Amino acid sequence: MRLNKGLVISAIALASVLTLSACTDSGATPSAAPVAATPTFAPGTTMAKLAEAGKITIGTKFDQPLFGLKGPDDKPIGFDVEIGKLIAAKLGIAADKIKWTETVSANREPFIQNGQVDLVIATYTINDKRKEVVSFAGPYYEAGQDLLVLAGNPSKITGPQDLTGKPVCTVSGSTSEKNIAAYTTNVIATDTYSNCLGPLRSGEVVAVTTDNVILAGLADQNSGEFEVVGKPFTKEPYGIGLKKDDTEFRAFINDTLEASFTDGTWAAAWEATAGKVLDTPTPPTINRY
Image (cartoon, rainbow, N blue to C red):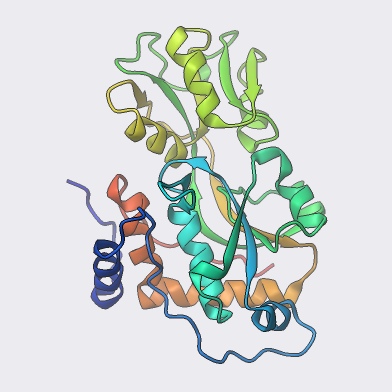
């Protein structure tokens, strides 16, 4: 049984998610947040432009179980997707007016910079290098890098210190790729984490490494094949990427996140997605840099 860790969930918000989920056949999880009827924003701001357009483009992962995974109707589902719906709702934009664009680790910054997306919510770790070219709101969740191994852990991997000289798979351009280089130079990098599972099955690599919540989703999706070592060795604050120095938009998103922490919608979104496998965490502290 999962145990909630010190967080009181709004019964109304959670009931809303569960009731709506029971009424859909698509596999998608409707947002717990009501769409703002007539939001008003300062002229010229990103919020005003998006609200007037009545639509938003959000980049997310399509291969991350629990956080961003393409569902039966070809629309992504998961916790990152629900966070996107919360933000869109505050702009007066309904979930069906969100355009979801697949972003992989290597193209998140370019997609923001060239305007292909308005936001990226894609298990996107906030770090100083990325902040040189994009801005971040949040964090809205804090993960930790861990290791996925074959069920039974035949290679007896207990942590990154056991990986010296051994082959490991991760995603090119990810924070995980940079972090694991401190432990082994024998790294196979691909474009998506799901592409690491074949090499792990075949023994080409002894482990897959990325954030623990992503690995938990992969293990859950492939029941009985893999297990997470369970010894995270980094802290990975997940942020929402947006155009560099759009301070008004960042402040709006941060306000929206903080409101969701206290009114129960953040917890309801978690319970309807990642919370089916993982405990409900305490929301992180927003970085108002």
